Image (cartoon, rainbow, N blue to C red; front, side, top):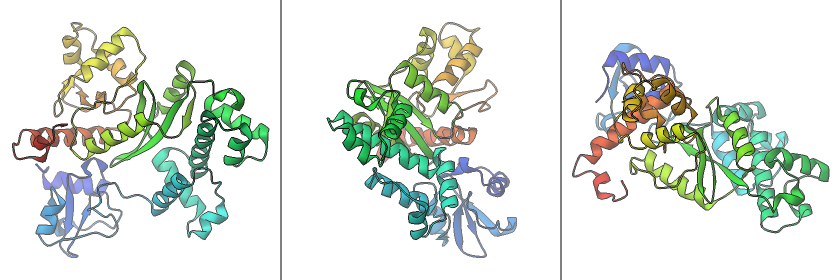
Length: 361
């Protein structure tokens, strides 16, 4: 159900991303409908009408905006980001220059800002992380240090050793004997997520903008194993489940998770996964469920220490007064996830829904 028009108009003026996929605005004077986050100049209040879905907007005769592309399932992103991300994936060992970016018609500073917003790192850093991850994979598969060095684009052996050392904490010659966690970026409708996994399961799944992410990565490297970007079957499985979750086709994840914490934290995380899709719990209610009614603050700390977002649904915990309270991935994403899951739950209760026909839901 849509919010009242005044609330939605305020969200339009603020370009509130928490309504992505749940509300659209039609502009009567142009006959075009947009996302509420559309960067176009805002229309007057009397000239807009709101819709809960794109079908309703099109049914009313409005055409999709060519700027914010409301018919696309993903958030609109820089064209440079999409194209360059695909090129890096296709050629992970390539070293990009500013001249090559300009030849593609992109301003290097614009590219840098686009990657910084989405992934928390510049394009050069993004490409280098993929290149080094590819080099580590060569070493793990039995390639020589020289081959991996050349693949990564390093003329200097010492420079390559230093880069690998920063990435995985060991010299290249010893890499093949070490366990390595694999990292990969997963793109979702509400932003990029960093996934880290190995054969045992998923160790980390976080939105790129989470402030605690650098410390979580550091902790994994120190307590578990070095980390390198690359491909791993566990992340392939995770990526498929994440895609189905955001498409409204999967309510329960099956991919295994690996979390290191205290016994109390482990109990909290286990109980988070017991909260049904479409429902929420307060910190106090969760504490009472654990038989420790006075431990609401401890529950909140354990909730904040969770580093496997969505799968271990810390976003389903709210304040006693119904407020969203803190969320490391930003409050607008918490609101988005809760609304997404409410709709999934409603669809699951409808016999004719596609979700009921999907035995994995």
